[in-house]
Image (cartoon, rainbow, N blue to C red; front, side, top):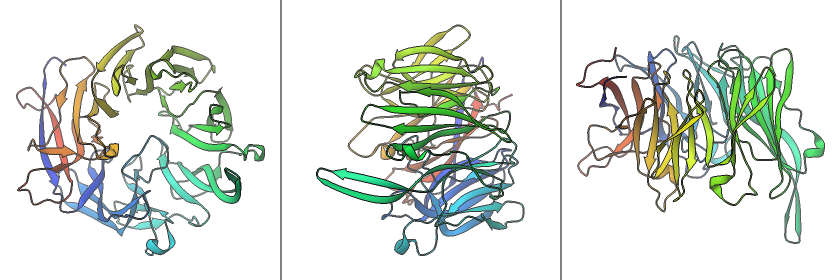
Length: 443
């Protein structure tokens, strides 16, 4: 773009009750978020609230569902799949979310899946037994005909050794389940071999192809302190799963190209002590199965592709400590560092691929999800990053999941006004609009 951007920010929902996990519907007509009405201090894996849906134009409240029992894990302790985040259907009609049982404080977490019809307001429950199938992360397919769910449903033997004491347990193990939009025809994708039960096993990252209903996922087996085996699979309806890639190095994240023909990921060799020299960036061709090594044992990791465009956004380990961001341009095989100072968490591409959002923060003694954070919007074409802040400069971002509108010109985020005279106790919901220089609407 030839002109600089300006950003207008307004508050959508005041912080009378803490607001978390905002998102736009895929068509941009609605906004959803969770109000934390009963924060859970006993079980750290989730908090309880009420799912609220607004009209994005009129700000009218369309739905308040959950009766203070919607379970979310908004703190994001890492990039694993153990998240309780609601998801929109691709047609923007349905929202699938986790709901806990009313007597959670006595029985522990036993959340079930529910689906809200935003046209009728009806809530339907998935036909899963919450004592046998415990759903975690959700991911709908591009067509909306299938739903991938990270579940824990496999009872397996587990032996724990501490010094001279050996204890045997039966614990729940991971599984990846694919079903219809409301839990119809569930299919377990992973056939865990019994001979692997002695290893520490886990389901890694999983994503649908952006062009068709095929699902890629990672399975990991930790054999020892520095011995690990990671496998990347591709599942397609009617044909089952096939192995794409296998490595003894650590593999935990991947990203599809916009056309769905290649996978981008990094492997980490934990035997290399220098963090700047132990990551390898790969590009895997799905049709031929050919693995292209882009960078070997470098400081770059977590390659992330936008929904359009060719640039690859990568995090980088800085020499002085902390994390930075870099852009890789495949057409000329060029890496351009973008952020070289501080800690930059959770980069997020705009749907148009012309810009990306990142959170710059400085560490302190508190857990990283509570660090005061400043969001910045950066153009791929270069230039000075745009600071995205509420109208009051004392407000601070407290949530790690900002959300773009489908047009990429609006950003939802959660921030708390730190001014002493403010009556708001908790973080509220803010909306920033990206305008051209001088406040003119974008063309």
